Image (cartoon, rainbow, N blue to C red; front, top):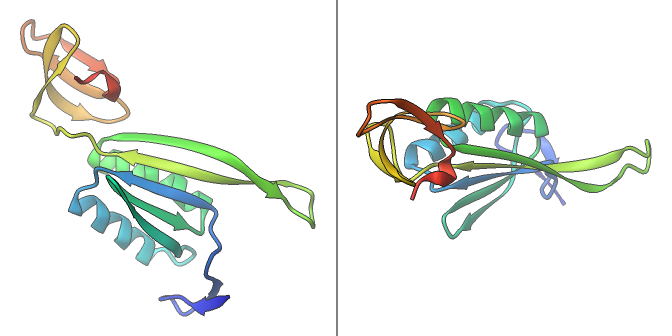
Length: 150
C-alpha cells in the first residue's frame, strides 16, 4: 500500500530502515524529534508506537537515525545505544540488509541533582555518554555509567 506523506511524496506505508526508541522522554525531547523528522526531506515515520515508558518510531533512514541519536545525546544528555539486526538479503545485489535500533534513554535525574552511586553521593555537573559530577564528601570530580546510579 502506498500513500502520500506530509512532504508530498508517495511512499510505501510500512517501509522502514530502523527504529528510534525513546525511553522516559520529556515533552521537549518528543518535540525535538518530531521537528527533526519534519525538517528532514528524506525521512518519514512509517509507524509510531506508544510503549510502557516511551515511544518507538519506525523511520525510513538509517543515516538519520544515527544522527538523531547523537544529536539527542548532545542536547539532552542521556544514554544512547545503537544495535543492528540482519533483516534479509537483497534479491538484486545479494547484499545483506540490516535494520538498526537506536535507543535513547533520558535519565530520571538532571544536571544539578544529587544522586547515589555505590559508596558515595555525587552532584551531577554534566550528562553525556557518561554521567559527570563532583563527589559531595571529597569534592573530587568523577564520571560513571548511567547504570551505576542507585
